[in-house]
Amino acid sequence: MACRHFLTLLDFSASELQALIQRAIVLKANLKAGELYEPLRGRVLGMIFEKSSTRTRVSFETAMYHFGGNAIFLSPRDTQLGRGEPIEDSARVLSSMVDCVMIRTFAHENVERFAEYSKVPVINALTDEHHPCQLLADMQTFYELRGSIAGKKVAWIGDGNNMCHSYIHAAAQFDFELVVASPSGYCPSAELVEKFADRVQVVSDPRAAVLGADLVTTDVWASMGQEEEQRVRERAFAHYQVNAELMSLAQSNAIFLHCLPAHRGEEVCGSVIDGPQSAVWQQAENRLHSQKALLEFLLVDTIG
Ligand code: CP
Ligand code: NVA
Image (tube, rainbow, N blue to C red; front, side, top):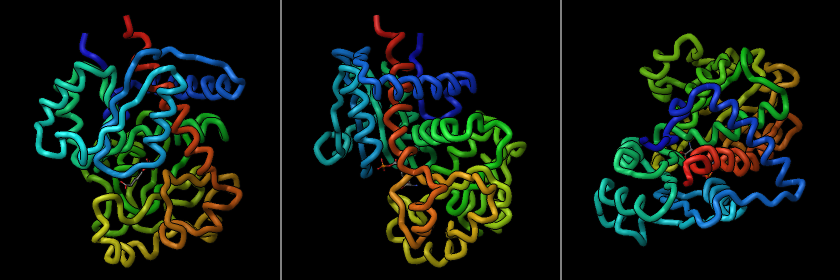
């Protein structure tokens, strides 16, 4: 049977995603209670990073160590991937040695091609189009703090980027209303918005998006690979900062999330990200627990 991959949130059913979040909460509690659980002893995760990372690398590596396995960090600087070895060949070779491959890269098509030729599960750890692992942590965090997100309103403020696209998928899979506020020229994929038009709306006014929201979230104005556009983007997004005034339009118990790293004074004010409504540290920690649930889901039942 073909193995499962996790390239976007659409690769899993809504009920599988719900189960994964619940399992993450249990694994987190068990870890904090000191339970030793090593279902991946002797198993290896290959981690290909073509972009920088703090949270994703440390959470996946720690997850594998907690589970009794190992992780190998692979950078294009010191592998043949960086010297032009075809993705298809790399996928065949790596997947003949390791038990799972995690990839952070630029073109989403690259993870799809890798997965097509891989004998083992492939996890998307961020592409220019999607960041599904982050959404597992975000959904876990909302659930822990407020319960089910079904029927709630989520406001995405700023760039219609990879994170925004994964929020669109999450709106469909977790059944919430998503209102995206982006400046012209920086809206999320029109195709994606149209596909999930029953859950997603794009507006230009951030106040309209945040009004009555249960969750307010944003991301950097210039993603990795867009550093040279920083100045142009600062001007385009100047009115899209999540500050105390904007947050005051949301529900009084609204949560603020940010995948991090954050730029205080740009997409978010210190008073919000460091304020009482912010759950960003819990969100970051949950990368570990939700990805442990993901690795267990992908690997434990299939190990003979
Ligand atoms: N949120 C996130 O993916 O962080 P890193 O870039 O540090 O992995
Ligand atoms: N949109 C950001 C997310 C980083 C976790 C980027 O792609 O750089």
